[in-house]
Image (spheres, rainbow, N blue to C red):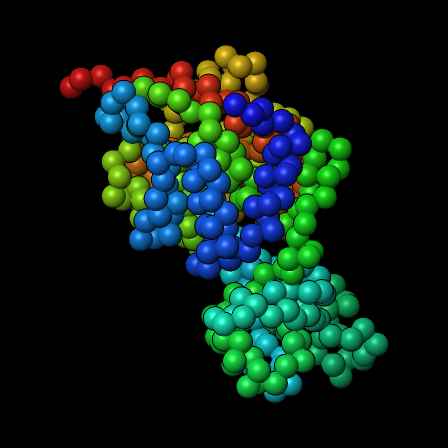
Length: 354
């Protein structure tokens, strides 16, 4: 079994990041994940909601548990095509145009992927130009940004560019950068968590109960994939792998210590399940941080809110610039794997007979 150290995680995350996967058009990353699982030789399948699921059989199917990591990323949607190849775009998930800045974006047409330039307008203008306000303290909004393609309308139509076409930051701008023990990249939310999920598929052996590892679809637009799966598969617990925003309002520090959430915008996480995870972390010598966060939801908290699972938890790694050019400690990512490997291999117990 290959050790998942910082170098291996960096390589796996880089490969995942370079697979485009805007919500609802996740085929490129699907192919990568499926090939990886094929090579590993584990039982896996893709369901009708576009989730990719690994089942690791336990000694019993009673009390099955799921771990999810969403594979979709944020971006924008084409709203309209104007003369001269200019495209109107609107957000997909929690994306902001000023995070990407002016630069190359990729448009995933039905027939071809084309590149354009996310544009905010010239700087040398007066108040006669509507984008002058962007120089005076107002953030750029999608309504005042656009994409220049310099293609004719027939050329755009031929490529399959239409209302609803996904736009993401250009692939050549997405390649991760190494900052010592940190990784910096777009879409660490949640490609780094998918890397942890793939590592779990390699390391979980003969658990006491069935374990499902779910690369979930369309999380950024409402946890649609996780809700579909958890509605159909009876689970005792669901653990989401996620990022944790680093901000002054939260008592979280950067570094190798993962974070366990107590609450987010959708409600409380299960305290009993959290204590089980804390105990597993302690067994492997890891002292977890804990936090309550706002403007945040996960597969687990949303599934709990809709009554699909009785217990949910969210294990995460501290991340700067969330939903932007994110920075995370590779040690924290690796430690999430250590905690869940211990918990799933040794910390699970079948439910007591009624």
